[in-house]
Structure formats: structure tokens, C-alpha cells
Image 1: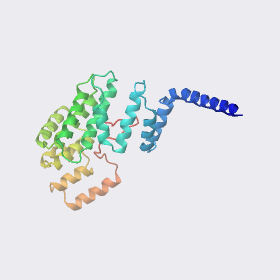
Image 2: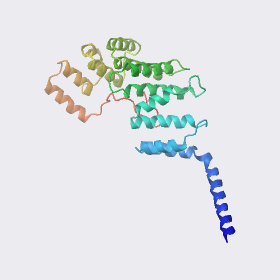
Image 3: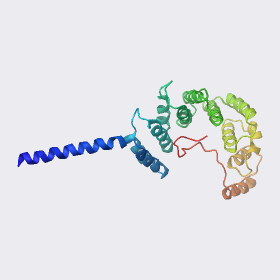
Image 4: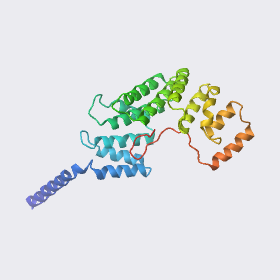
Length: 257
């Protein structure tokens, strides 16, 4: 009887091991990756990160897909320090795909600035270094170059070098006179926050009259009386406005420009 029970136990253990071995190749397979992406899309980044921790395999063909998703999840969770650290730890001169590296470097630069509680020369330098990697890598796109330039400008303000930041904005406008509204709004906020609101006046026409950033700068400069500001604010509440929020993670997992 004892030998029979022992034989049954051994067969069960063997079957369990065979099942696990058969499932192991699927651990980081497309099904698991798709499931993690669905968790992020459903607003469950904590569960998505848990799935990534369980499934991401080093040295596999899908590692960059998992890492792209991980960076997006860390962004959604606001884990900026961890995100920047992972990007900085990427092996230099690696054979990882260039588009992945450029996206990761830009995400890391963004995270370095967001992870700083206040003005920080260290965070500013880290952001500039990562942005430079993206610009000087192989064949960056125009949008990637512009995004890197914006991050460098933000890093100058973050490092308390507002004068250099302002000069960089002027150079940026020479290359792109018609700034997109979100970029113009971000520049306005940076300049107004560093005592350069009067110099930001040329940027105001780039935003709709009811844009909250335009209203705030005009009020600060005394160009818009409180009743007018209140009226425009009511208009802004009724009309969708592009607010200069920092990039969030798109479906692919990395912050968008």
C-alpha cells in the first residue's frame, strides 16, 4: 500500500513538473504581454506591474516590449525615480533597437525632472544627459528632437538657470515659430514661475483667449482685470482646452511628445 501511494505521488510530481515546463515558454509570451497591457489600459497599473514582474524575461526577443510597458506603468504610477534609474541603467552601446532606446531616454529625462521635489542641479544634469543620448543616437525623428529640446529647456529652469532657459526658448522659436499650444503653455508656465512673465508676452497669442495659462499670466501682469478673468474662466470650463500637462503613457507604454 505504501509503495502504491509513493508511486502515485511520484507520478503527480512528474506531471506537475511537465505542465510547468510546458507553460514556461508562454510566461513572457504575447498572451501575457497583452494581458498586462489590458490591465494598464483598464486603469490597474499596480496589477500590470505585478504581471510584468512575474513574466518579463531577460534576454528574450520580447524584453524590449516588456520594458516599454514597464516604463509606461511606472509613469502611470508616478514612480519617477525608479523609472529614471532603470533608463540610466540601460547598457551603453547595446544592440537594443534604436527606437526603443530613444523613447526610453526621453522617458527617463522626463522622469528625472518629475522626480525632483524642487530645483535640482543633479536632476537637471541627468535629464540633459538622457535627452542628449536621444538626440545624438541613430536617426532620431523630428518630433523626438523637438521633445528633447523642450526637456533640455525645462532642465535649465529646473536647475535654476532661467536666463539660459529663456535664451533656449528664443532659439527654439527660431526653428519653430508656430509653437504648438501645449508647448507654448509649458514655456509660459516656466517663464512666469521664474520672474519672466513680461518676456513671455509674445507667447500669449499662441494660446486661445480662454486658455487657463494665458488667463493666469495676464492676471499676473495686470493685463486682465478679475471680472474679465472670471468671464474667460467660465468660457474655459465650457470649452475643452489643451492644458500643458506633462506627457503620460500612451498605449505603447512610453510618454508621448
